[in-house]
Image 1 (cartoon, protein in one colour):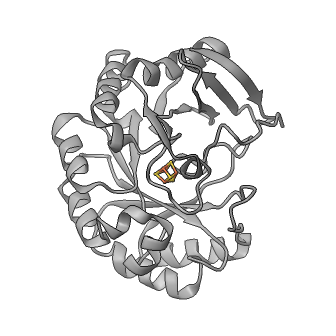
Image 2 (cartoon, protein in one colour; image 1 turned 180 degrees about the vertical axis):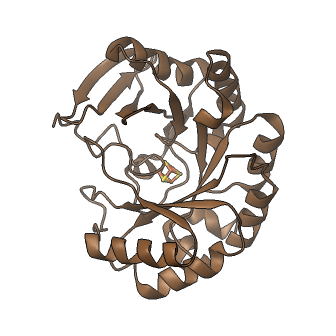
Image 3 (cartoon, rainbow, N blue to C red; image 1 turned 45 degrees about the horizontal axis):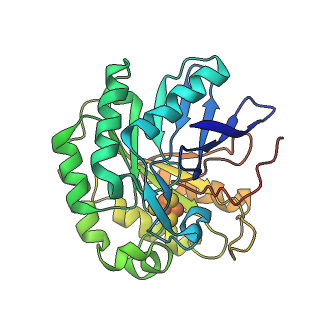
Length: 277
Ligand code: SF4
C-alpha cells in the first residue's frame, strides 16, 4: 500500500488517503491529543450498512480489507508521521464486525505490537451475534453507533436497525464483557432537527438507563456535500449534554479535530476531496 495523499491540519491531525495494491483506496486518520496519539483505521473499502448520513455508506460495499491491510494503515501512519501511536479506533470506513475475521486478526496483531486491550476500540452499528462473538474472542473496548433513541427513528438513519432492533443490540452490548475501566461508548451523531430535540434527549436518557457503564459521545454532524443533513447549533448540543450529565451519564461533545476527518464510524469517503487545512 502507498500514500495517495496526506493532509495535515493546523492542530496536527493527519488524514491519509491510502492506495491498496489493487488500486482501491481507503482513508485513515491520525489524531493527536495531549497525551495520546490515536489511529482511526478503516476495515472495508466502502460499507454495506448504508447509514443515511454517511459518506462511506453512499459508496456502497466494494471489499473487505485483509488483516495486513488494516494493520498496514497503522504502520504506514507511524512511519509517515514519525510518532508512536498509542490508541486505535475502528471508526474509519466500513463496519468492522462485517469483516469480523480480519478485524479480529488485526486486533491480535496490534496487541502483539504492544497495544493493550484498553487502547483498542471497535465501533459498530450493532450486529448482535458478532458483538457477543467479539467479546468471547478478543479483549478490546466497544463503541455502539446509536444515533437515535427509538427504533422508528433509528431504522431511518441506520437501516440495519430494521433487522436488529435496539432491544437486541442493547442485549448484546450487555453480554459484552465490559471489564474494569471499560465503559460502553455510545456514539450519537447530532443531526439538526432530526435527533437533537428535547424529546430525543428524554428518550435517550430512558434508553440508556437500561445499560450501566456508558459514556456518551455527542458528535455534531459534519455536513457532506449531497447528503441532506445539517450540523446542529452548539447550543442544542450543549443542552443535550447538560441533560445527559444531569441524568447521571458521563457525556462529551466530540470536538472536530483538524480536517473534519473522523466524526463517527466511517464518515469518510475517498470521493470526498482531501483538503489541507
Ligand atoms: S456510518 Fe459506519 S456503518 Fe454506517 S455506512 Fe458509514 S461506515 Fe458504514
